[in-house]
Length: 226
Image 1 (tube, rainbow, N blue to C red):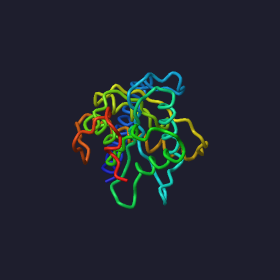
Image 2 (cartoon, rainbow, N blue to C red):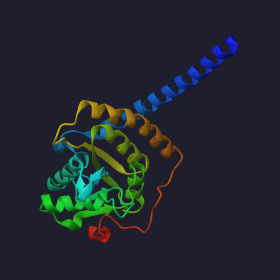
Image 3 (cartoon, rainbow, N blue to C red):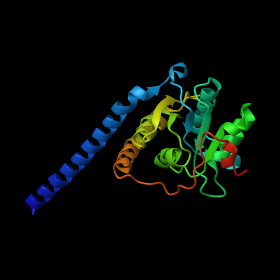
Image 4 (cartoon, rainbow, N blue to C red):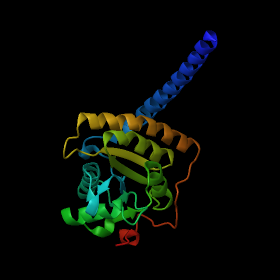
């Protein structure tokens, strides 16, 4: 009986060891294969037609979280410096009482004097993979700057480039510094999200929703619902 238990223990340990090595290998591969496309300095970001701003949490009364605010501000900054011509804000608007994309548009309207028709809203960007897939197939994005936090940038750029978008990444500057404990939590969750993204790309997964094409070269007003 003891031998059986011991053998089972080593089998389970071996399985967990293999899973750990797979997770580690995918994370290293994703980071190393994309880091040359990622920039910290806005003056060094190559010109692209579109900046993709992935969604993040919003609170009651459409108040954007600090994570989302930093991404939005970075996207606006890229437009103001002339690095990009259009902004594609993607996020979760799957419920009537929760709306990331219109919250972002309202924030920009309040804080910045921009031509709002340059702002496109993707209401079905429920996750990073869906955001990049829909950017390509619904909004006809061929090249882009993706702006998001450092922990998220590698996966975002990896997915976009794997789907055929000529994408680079710009790490969103932090207006308010985040706690170290929060950063650690993000990194741990992201290590598993990268594995999911890797297999989504390999399996040619499709997003929950697609729909008619709304080319990014047109007017963003076609994507507004309020």
